[in-house]
Length: 137
Image 1 (cartoon, rainbow, N blue to C red):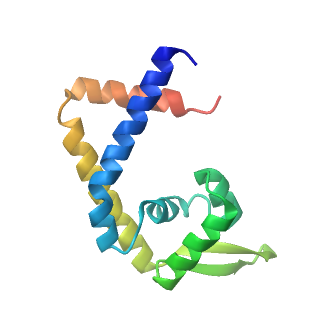
Image 2: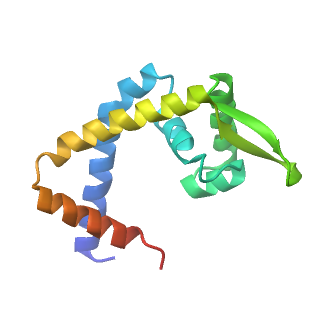
């Protein structure tokens, strides 16, 4: 990795960390820590615990703990998958949907506050660049 690429990676990581840190108290008011928020945000597209752990790059043991907490909070429901009775499928409850949506709104507001520092053209360019960087190879 070149120095420029490493520097850009660090800046991107710093931005994400600063935004998440600014939202920690609001997430805590919802009963969530940041990792649990990411579980709620991704469960609709990756409804199986092992798949979700892989998607979020979280150990299966940690995922088990997060799922237990989110089930206890009433944010997730664990159900037997009708297609494969050996597997559990995770589903957001209405309470979980509301918590996820409120958490997304908090994060969006904080990120938007930072995006206000750049022009609308730069926002469009940032979106284009991020889409290009995250596109499948």
